[in-house]
Image 1 (cartoon, rainbow, N blue to C red):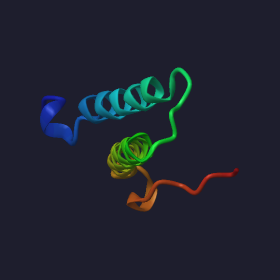
Image 2 (spheres, helix red, strand yellow):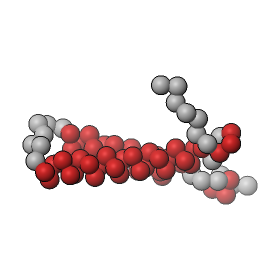
Image 3 (tube, rainbow, N blue to C red):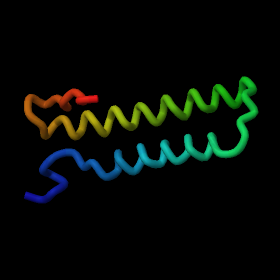
Length: 74
């Protein structure tokens, strides 16, 4: 059985999550203007980043006990 048919592939989702994190980091570089457009863009970037993180976490959970990602100890 090939790796592709064994289940979901995590790499593309991880790549998109890391890309979203980098876009957020770039947006936060330099002095922020704190105008409405800047704040809206940051909100959009953080929502996108969180969405990719959730998707990645859910994919990892498929292979864990009970199909759920464990709670954090922090």
